[in-house]
View 1 (cartoon, one colour):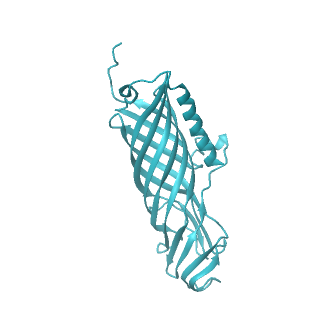
View 2 (cartoon, rainbow, N blue to C red; view 1 turned 90 degrees about the horizontal axis):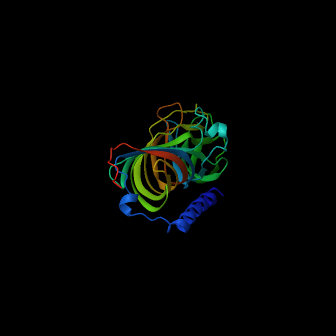
View 3 (cartoon, rainbow, N blue to C red; view 1 turned 45 degrees about the vertical axis):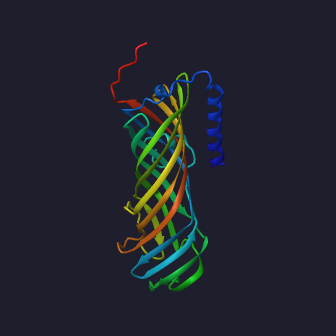
Length: 284
């Protein structure tokens, strides 16, 4: 339903503009004047992840779980959560600030706060060894099936799967009607992962703190609806690759996990644009 709603929003927006587009179509050089503008936005995402193999390593164990399923955990919509400054970072959110180096291209910095939750009680294959001395799961495994019950493993990046990234993006105007502009944006980005991983593994003390864990790459395309060249609402489709070779899992510094997977986001964001360059207004 969330993907359907976002798709319908994009289609309805385009249909409305297209229906009115022949009223006012201005020259491209007028519609694309952006150099020297600063923008920022805040919004929310729905995310999906491919299955991944997760390697767990420690002094008393080393094993791989194959094709592990996971999902996101967007907060239920409540005004007191989404719009309260004290709780605004609880939902899955996207923040970005950027600057146009010319009329089409901008460079930006952003944080994608996603949440990654391993599906509990799923059955996967396991290979490796566990020898803690006080666990019913001690033993050797060779591509055998195991149920990921809570007493064996809880694995979540829920505060969260924080993708800190830099991007270069291009913006082009599609149509302009009075004080409304419809823009197309697309770009690529790269950054690092700073998750706060909530993990309980076997009988070990859990670790739940921020840790630099890996890197990510992404590409995005969006539809931007701008009002008076100041305020805008934007819908985005974003996808990419995440590789985390160093995920903290327990209180022991030697214990870690590693995984890599692909992700996809649907984002709805709200923002503003400020002209930092002093431009002479065109003479009438």
